[in-house]
Amino acid sequence: MSAQPIKSDERNVEKPIAVFDSGVGGISVLKHIYALLPHEQLLYVADSKYAPYGNKTPEEIQARCFEIADFLIAKEAKALVVACNTATAAAIDALRDKYTLPIIGMEPAVKPAAEASKNGIIGVLATTGTLKSAQFAGLLESYGRNVKVVTQACVGLVECIERGELNTVSTRSLIQQYCAPLLAEGADTIVLGCTHYPFVREVIREIVGEKISLIDTGAAVAKQLKRQLEEHALLSASKQPADVKFWTNSEAENSKQVIEALWGSGADVSVIL
Ligand code: DGL
Image (cartoon, helix red, strand yellow):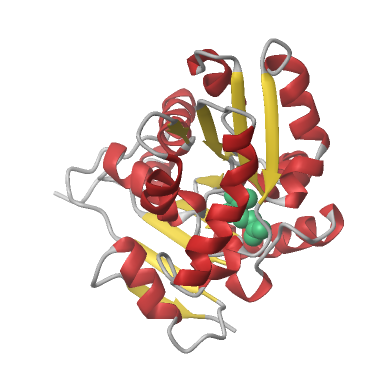
């Protein structure tokens, strides 16, 4: 008997999910996606050559996002996750205008933090670009009215994490400097509003102490992705463990090692320049 032709929708469901960030930070989100959807093929682009996005204009960030989205869509992505708060703020609308596939973005967890805070004071650590964005202003307007929100741009911290310096003297001193104003204002809940920061969560924890809640949105983004795949009938039917493929355009000699250190050894990393 001849093989049945595969229906087009059956082919689509086995296509990969594409995830990208200005660099390696989005790997913190990728980990949640892999844990929740272990049978989905995953593609990840670290745009490290152009990191940080935090001090770029929205137009510059949109141009980077289009280039990466084109690369990933050419690899037949069925959904796109913008695993970057800064890129989401600058480019999510432009991406959704240009492409038809489901696109999932992310934003600092102001809403859950405002709900979790007991004393009504929350701190937000994020990039300058995120904090200056209209999206963030909208978040404060919607969810920050009944709490005091102390924001702190963490200039230079993304670069430390890109270099794989998660617990060096200079990384610790930057974190200390950026957490100090939040502690001085009495925040009992701190939002990690950049996908790089979960990789220094332990250092932040040591500096702020055990009593303060640290909140990020990686798990929520993975759940939102799953919901979107269900709505579009795009969930994989595979029972096989999926492949995860990384691309980086970093010019650093240790770029593969940094990705392996954050994801785990044996990561399949290609360098694109
Ligand atoms: N991971 C990005 C974010 O969530 C970092 C942005 C940057 O490169 O400055 O905002």
